[in-house]
Amino acid sequence: MPDLLSPCAIVTGTSSGIGQAIALKLLSEGWHVHGMDVATSTLHHAQFSSWTLDLTKAGELEDALDQIVSKHLPQVLVHAAGVLRVGSLGELDMQAGQLMWQLHVDVATRLANRILPIMKHARRGRMVLVGSRVSGGIAGRSQYAATKAAILSLARSWAAESIAEGVTVNVVSPAATDTPMLKDPARAATTPRLPPIGRLIQPDEVAALVAYLTRPEAAAITGQDIAICGGASVSR
View 1 (cartoon, rainbow, N blue to C red):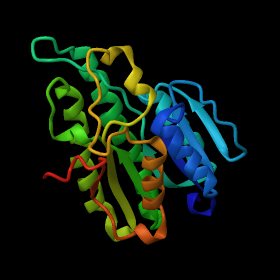
View 2: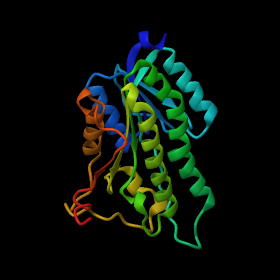
View 3: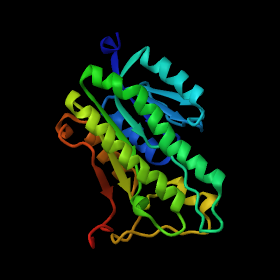
């Protein structure tokens, strides 16, 4: 039975950036981490299992999850994998939009559909989705913003379905973060907006909040979109 197996965390996007920082933070707190990404991970740790796969390919994702749940009980699920493609009206790329929807929304849905019922059965578990401060809409990033807005609704809905069993679902939404995504040639025409603190958010800062949400003392926090914005929300 799954509830007799050792606990683990599943984290997507662990080859770099926020996902890698989250994996390192959870490893430092004693978790066995299963890291999933299309790129090969550079992490080397006795408690880290690397899965190189295309998350948008349903068969590959289901196969990896089958193997993980046969050996470990997932108690933490973090979807941090993401891509950013920019475009203004009249120049929107439908393929790019589909990729972002598949990776941000469809993959989150597949992960939740498979893992949250296991957590609910065990009556313990945490799911965290990495969102974005642009989910409310921003010029030139409409398709990206729409996918991040969608995961907010998903998270709130899943939180409502899971809280009675002790499972929480939250979104952590950083402002511009110092990751390889900022250097992606696909967004060369746009520059990140520095938050009022005058610097980019650091991946370790995002990872620290995610790690807090996995702990017992965060059991009363669910269905929330928590911003790490460096003061960008102060004027609201």
